Image (cartoon, rainbow, N blue to C red; front, side, top):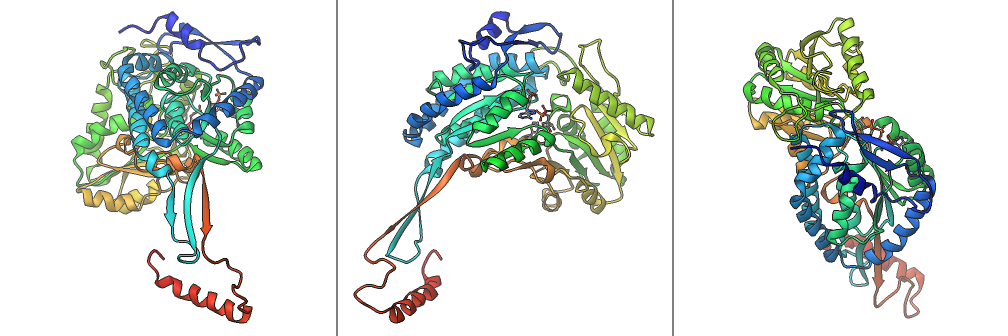
Amino acid sequence: MPVPEAAVFERLRGFAAVDANQEHASRTINEVFTGRALGEVPVGTAADVTLAFEKARAAQREWAARPARERAEVLERYRALVVDNREYLMDVIQAETGKARWAAQEEIMGLIFAARYFARVAPQLLGSHKVPGAFPILNRTAVRSQPKGVVGVIAPWNYPMLLSIGDSLPALLAGNAVVVKPDSQTPYSSLSNVELLWQAGVPKDLLQVIPGPGGVVGTAIVEACDYMMFTGSSATGRTLAEQCGRRLIGFSAELGGKNPMIVTRGANLNKAAKAAVRACFSNAGQLCISIERLYVERAVADEFTEKFVAAVKAAKLGTAYDYSTDIGSLISEAQLETVTKHVADATSKGAKVLAGGNARPDIGPLFFEPTVLSEVTDAMECGRDETFGPLVSIYPVADVEEAIARANDTDYGLNASVWAASKAEGERIAERLHAGTVCVDEGYAPAWGSTGAPMGGMGLSGVGRRHGPDGLLKFTEPQTVVVTRFLNLDAPWGISQERWQPFLMAIARGIRFLPGR
Ligand code: NAP
């Protein structure tokens, strides 16, 4: 399968929400596998953001007035269009990220799961809910959800379609407009969905994608939006949290991780070793929830390591736009530099290379072998810092207690994986791990794919959650409406306060016996 033609990218350029009456600088986007130019996109400005928000606010008012069921139908149509256009969308993802085809498919599956889950639950979750009022019979109390307004979505380059458009879907469904800033390296993944959303019935100005630098376009979005959804590094997340805090707007952030996997002595080592390759090296390790630390009970450490290293060495690197490869490229010189630096630092301080360890310019300019290190210590950069590349450290541990203690010895808390003698043992270990998601007998994928459950991080790994009911309701403002009937709280019929107030107190004291309290 060849890379999409230049005409495809030229067309996508036209979906960037920039002011056509103004001159814009351009940024060239390269095919990662070869370094050749795919096309150019305009570099957005703060003025483009101002204009986009004006249009978005007008579109949002009309959209929010539609019933949630109607908005859900639009999302269902979008899901069907994603399924129909999946090969094209995967080509676009692969071209600008350099990931293997199956990792691109993970993004498409993520979009399909998110669209289906949110479309299914939104009408019920966004509807009005009765709750017990302050005083029985006198008060009829209901809670409903209002949209925030215009939501800003700032996305990274690693899963650029899923983390830009996938996070926009619940925001749209909740009745908001969305302004997206894709990462500067990967604008096409977001732009390729604009037309599909229009075809599905999303009004033109309701979702706008503005490519451009974080410090300009991103900052302007944070200053204008009513809620910020961010995915990226913990450092940028902290900066945006401060800006959102100053503006007193809601903020949700999915950040970095240093995710552990635990393998106990009773685990199925063949299965664990095979699955660990995917868990560590999906998108060449450039995945927030991928595994960078492996804790294996000493009794089975040699056997597991032998199987794992053999599987890693057998993994096929390549540039194909089909399913014939296991691992693709890193995305940028900066990523290649970080991985090279972490490996060099570790080996210079005594770490041993069990597999990989080298760049592979013979395959493509930004390829690096999947690398397994042993004897890694906290004095090494990759000991505690996120590498965000194809590098994993393996640590034999005395027992499960040590594995849990070391897995939790991190400022992050995003994802963890457990392989144990039984599902029950796996679940018992999972309960003791400080991580937003834990997969028993898998690496990360089912946690992401369980769209009905919250997904996100503890500690430095994030604030708030995507997916699950909260993944929709965070884009809304709950509003409580209380209707008072028959009597107000003032003393009626000339009753004195001395008699009326004890009567109210008697009701308050007895109220706990009423149903629903
Ligand atoms: P990053 O540098 O924080 O960039 C992410 C996005 O933020 C980009 O669009 C970037 O724009 C923008 N940005 C940067 N500085 C900004 C600022 N001052 N104001 C507004 N926007 C700004 O992160 P990255 O290095 O690309 O992504 C890798 C990190 O993301 C890793 O740590 C990874 O673990 C994390 N991540 C987490 C998840 C998750 O779900 N938890 C998922 C994926 C990735 P430009 O670069 O275009 O200027």
